[in-house]
Image 1 (tube, rainbow, N blue to C red):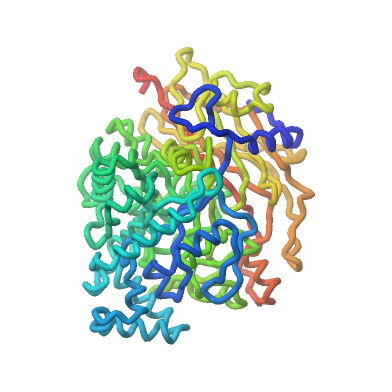
Image 2: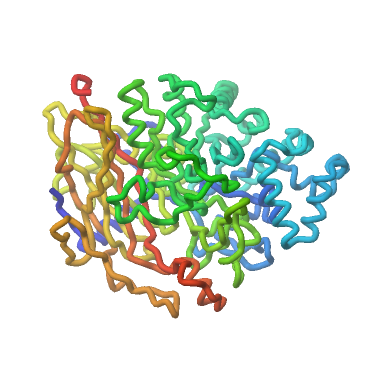
Length: 620
């Protein structure tokens, strides 16, 4: 049963979400809990990444941080670029593979120019246009196939770029105001383009991070070797580091395969190590979403959104059976089954989102979207410009998603507090808007808890998103506090859903989507389906009205089919009312002539990290 409270609580929720705290969080004390929702981007490439530089990007890490702070910068195509709102925290994650090499090629380094391929690339970059785009595609293909010249893979070029990357992060770190993280991307393109990339994020400052050189895939492509590198860093420096796997929709079924990278069986130690070093997973970014897929979740009416499901990074077609090993929801279910078999869950992933921009400009605002590459920065025909090219198929510009961003619940705006929130999975992912989510599980929440002290009740008598809920000694079903507040500068909310996944006694996997709070006076039909919220988008003006929807939605909900003997997870999905997509803003702004197949309207959304229910030992 649920007890929805909607707009009556908007003022209370606004006060709750805006409250500040000044204490750190070594452990979640009764009154020492995270009160700030802080937003940032975990996935930003600058012109110092080889593929971005080959596309003509010139924005560097220093300018990327300026942009993240809300300052105006000049884009790679010479346009003024500025966020409508600054981020609370930010990081540059340039590829470790070839870090610094593109700068050497552009500068005409004699050692590089002795290689015909690299000399030709430099000429293509100087020519620009189609020649530069072709050179970038060749770089990606050669990297995916392990064919890059040895001059590119030599790590000696990395050191100066890594030193400057650290310098940029340290220069712009202002504790309490704007947090930066030292980070890089480890870029595995297994089997010719299967995306198994990870962003590696340090909790520490430059004095520790500078003691190591980022790992490259020229040295190893095995994730367990990355985890060993991370442990070696921690042992050497006393610091801490975590990794975030990219969206798996272009991994051709390898992101969540039920075996180790070399094909050997999983072990408990392997599963525990993966869960320890990889607490979050990228659910949405510019290259689409990896929440779920219509073929995996046919009963989920909102599963078909931002689909990039035609191949890997070089558009090599997907092998049969790939989809179940590429999507977050399915992996969450499989992970619980594996936990029952091995005693450890390798896929215990909280919710993350980032842009994966290769412009240095983390602009996921639909009406201010700067695209993935320089060649896809704002212009009239970018919607029809190839983004990724393969032998038999292309991804076109209009298929980019202006996504995403991650919110963390933290006690203060510092590296330590935000990193700790990531580590304990107290995070939520959005497609860009800064809507906020609260999600708690306990055993005695009631409607009376939906007030100004909603979070206090949640922490004192339950667990937050990202945590485990132990079985109740009295066998009671859990109750959940659900709360969502719209982006104060964005669209109203359509509904809040709880997504449940579970494993039955036979080891079979199941899922169900529950509408638990919604706007207006709508009621579910006889089949339980909630009518659509409506649509106020004006296609001629690229505008919408908040005349429908709610600005806050809350509920106390209990699972009507709860079985205390079954492993289960629960996460929130929040949907906004329909709003203009970036393609509609471009169509109106530039007068672009787009076919009907190009989507112009969508529903932005957000996802909480799951809460996992663990049966009592005697029941499991």
